[in-house]
Length: 335
Length: 225
Image (cartoon, rainbow over all chains, first blue to last red; front, side):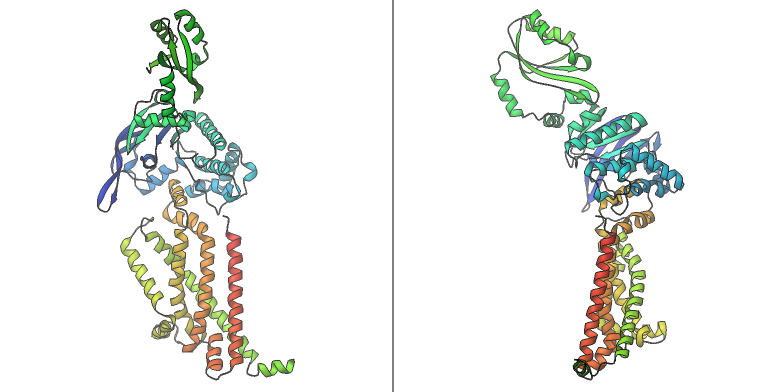
C-alpha cells in the first residue's frame, strides 16, 4: 500500500518556490492498477517520481507498506528502489548493452545475485515478454514496442512489488500500445504487482486501470474507480479527458442535440445490463418513441459498458425512466 | 629517376628521420596515455560536479573548471617554456623526448577532460534516471552506465587529443623536445633544408591521417546507436 500524507513538492526557481504538487493525500492499494491522468505540466511526472524518491518531497510523508520512505538514508533508499521497477516513455535502455544485458543490469547493480541466478532470471523474463530471439540484439535494432518490452523485463528483474510507468505507451503506435497494455495487465494479474501508471490518454486508463486520479495544475482534482470517473466525470478537466478519448466534438454534439425533438436522456449501462435488450420493451410498455442520437459499447478494463444518448417523444416518460432505473441503468436528463 | 630522387632529397638522412619518427611516436603515445589517465577522471568529476548533475558542487566545479581553463588558455608554446622548471624537478631534464612529455600532458589532459565532460553530457538524462531508479550508487552509474554509453564519444575525444598532441609534440622541438618537429626546426628551418621540412611535414600528415582513421574505426565499432 502506498500512502501519500499531505505530500507536497515545490521547486526553487530564482529564490522563489514554484509548487509542482500541492499538498496531496491519497492511498494506492496493493495489487491495483492506479492511473494518474493529466495534461503535461499537471504534476503527474512529479507525483510518480515521488514514489521512488527520484524527486524528494518538500513536505509530508510517503508511507509504503507502513514504512516512511522519506526517512530513508542513502543505502536504505537504494535497497528500497530495487523493489520498485520503473518504465519510461523513451524506454531509457542502455544503447551499449544487449537486450539480455539490459535486463540483467539491475540484478548486477544489486550485487546479491549469482551469475546463474541472473542468467536464469533473464531467460525467464525474455520468455515472459516474448523477446527470446532478440536476446543478443542491441536496443537500436528493436522496434518501439520491443524496446518497451525490454524496459518492462528490466523493471521486473529484481522482482519488485511496485511498477511505475511514466507515459509508458505515449511513444508507441495504437497497436503496440494495446499489446504493451495487455502485457502490463497480465503482469498485474499474475504477479499481483501494484502498478502506478501516468498518462495523458484516458483510453489507457480505461483499458487497464482500476482506479484513477485526475490531475490539474499540481492538484488531484478527481479520484475514484475508473468506471465512476469515466462514466460520470465531475471536474471539467476530467470531462475534457473523457470527451477527448471518445473523440466527441462538443460543439457538434450540441448541434445534434438542438435538432433533436422531445426529451434527451443519456443512459449508462454497466456490466451485464449492457447486453440486455431493454430499449424495445421499455418503448412498448411506456409508449414512448425514441431515436438514438449517439451510442457506444466498450470495456472499462474487463467490464463492458454502454452509453446511449436518446431523444424520447410521447408516451409516459416517467414510466420509461423508472423502467430504465429498475434495470440498473443510470439515467441522466440532458434536456 | 633514382638520381633525381637523390638530388631532390640530398639532405635527407633516413636513419635520422626514422629515429625522429620513433621519438614523435613515443612522445605522443606517452603523453596521450597520461592525458587520458588524468583527463578521464577530471572530466568525469567536471561532469558530476556540474549544474543539476549527480554530485552538484558549484565550488568544486568552479575550481576545477578554472584550472582546466587556465591550462587551456595558455598557448602551448608558452606552456612549454613556463613548464621548464617543473619538468626539471619532475624528471631531471627538460630536454629530449622525456622532457617533452610533462608539458604535453599539461596541455593534453585538460583538453581531453573537457571532451570527456562534453561527451558525458550528451548521454541521455533518462538513462541516468533509469539507473538511479534501479538503486545504483553514483559509482555504479558512472562505471555501469555513463562511461559505456559515452564510450564512442570518449574514443573520438582520444583521437582528437592524440592529433592535438602530434602538433604539440612538433612544437616542443622549439625548446629541444626531440622528434620530427625538432628535425624540421633544426634542419628544415634553421639550415634551409627544404627537403627535410617536406619529408617531416609529410610524415606528420600521414601520422595524423592514420590516427584519425583508427579513431573513426573504433568509434564505429563501439557505436550501437
